[in-house]
Amino acid sequence: MNHDNYPNDYIRGILQSVKTIALVGASQNSARPSWIVMKYLLERGYDVIPINPGLAGQELLGKRVYGSLAEVPGPIDMVEIFRNSEAAGPITDEALALNPLPKVIWMQLSVRNDEAAKRAEAKGLQVVMDRCPKIEFGRLSGEISWQGVNSRMISAKKPILSGKGFQKLSLNRPR
Amino acid sequence: MTDRLPGFNTLAIHAGAAPDAATGARATPIYQTTSFVFDDVDHAASLFGLQAFGNIYSRIGNPTNAVLEERIAALEGGTAALAVASGHAAEFLVFHTLLQPGDEFVAAKQLYGGSINQFNHSYKNFGWNVVWANADDPASFEAAITPKTKAIFIESIANPGGVIVDLKAIAAIAKKHRIPFIVDNTMATPYLIRPFEHGADIIVHSATKFLGGHGNSIGGLIVDGGTFNFAGDDRYPMLSKPRPEYNGMVLGETFGNFGFAIAARVLGLRDLGPALSPFNAFLILNGIETLPLRMQRHSDNALAVAEHLASHSKVSWVSYPGLRSDRYHNLAKQYCPKGAGAVFTFGLKGGYEAGVQLVSNLKLFSHLANIGDTRSLVIHPASTTHRQLTDEQKKQAGAGPEVVRLSVGLEDKEDLIDDLNQALDAA
Image 1 (cartoon, rainbow over the protein chains, first blue to last red):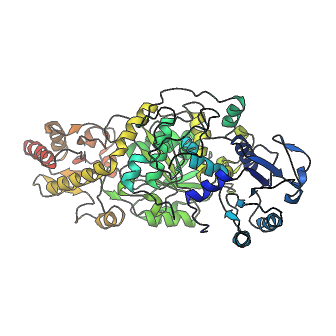
Image 2: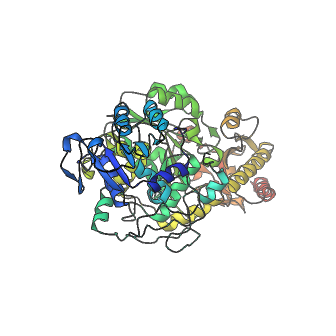
Image 3: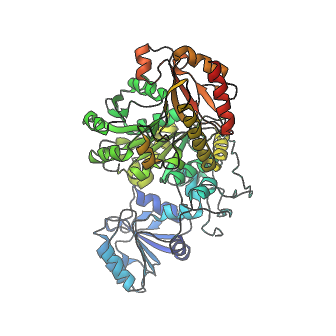
């Protein structure tokens, strides 16, 4: 995968297929991007499992916080890394030690670790770096266009309402 | 398998617009409403907390305006944009986002007169201090920079026409000193010049002019290039410090490379209020759909009229960079090879009286104080917009007694030349 320029279909495929997302670096501060992204993904129907050793055992946005990926009971589809680029290395290795393996390693906007990405891809995982899943969901669904953001999407097809209100759009937009 | 970026003509028609999700309406609907129903209480909280994308109240954002915002962001190659009530409002919100009281910014002295007034007088009340530089001399910008300098501001093609600015040279100075480089791209439009490709960080527009293009709507636009890293930069607290209005959120960090556009919206537009009417946004969007066709015709007509005037016995000089003999011709070839725009000035041998006579004699050119209409426009600055100035001030502003400014429209160029001929003959 060329990590400088992801095809829209690659990102869309990931966001349409994953259901359980472990969010490493979860925060209880509602002004932090990690809190905002967790809330957004929960509202879009993902099962988000917050990971933060300092908050282990507590509840965050109604979800139990775990101290590490290894402590999470049950399979994880995607590991979303909300830490710095250096820390993304060992976190990727923790993810690669899980059984069953996750399908996707996603490093947040500004986080990039090419060595870790190679290790994950060698084991057959899909990797996304330096992207925000909230921004990507908003871009591909059309929601982000309400904020005047350049979605770089052109289409003569209608956006699809998610069915959960007027102001949420679905990723299942015809292409 | 990359996603190919559509061409300029395609973006001018499609960027930001799609069939309406609720009705399938193909033209962008005019969402003439003040407010938007929340899906539920939690959704309302998410919107007010900037945690979800969506619409609250048309002062802050509106779906029709949002199409215009994404359209201009795509055409300029930026990350996001903000539509506001006028070009002046666009400048105001840009500086409000960047400057604190006591700060300075460096601006080219070759600017639209309204901008010069805004900078010289209105901004003084906010403690924002303009330092003037010479657009023809990039080194003058570097000489004007102090530790208080927070922005550099220029027009790509400067009003009243005829000045092409060396964007790359000034961008290099801005980068060296880590100062955001703001370009007013009103006269060029992204069809002729795309300033982000030459190092601009932020673009502003008076959409009233060529973007709308039909002389029917006032509007302004701010485009975020996503190129300046505001996060962690203490000089720009609106973007780099926790905002008490938003529960301690750091906008430059949370919104990454479109943080500037968001800050201008949620700190500037929300609190200061110069919102664009959705109806005006609709008319400007309609204009933009034909921007590439119109700008080419504007420029071609302007060149034909300028060439004719340059050879007319009653004309002493013509200042149009499309002319081979013009001092800005090489810069025009470098920055706007498709054309040098529609607006330029020329001088009459007969001086002040000849200028007054010419304006009165013209039958097709409209005598008014605007540019960028389908119709051809004319003004004699010395007897109108610059009337209050002394003769010396008039000269310095490029508005000497003999100067006439044209904004060449989309009519047949033969008719424009005929009209100028009959008016010059009688003057």
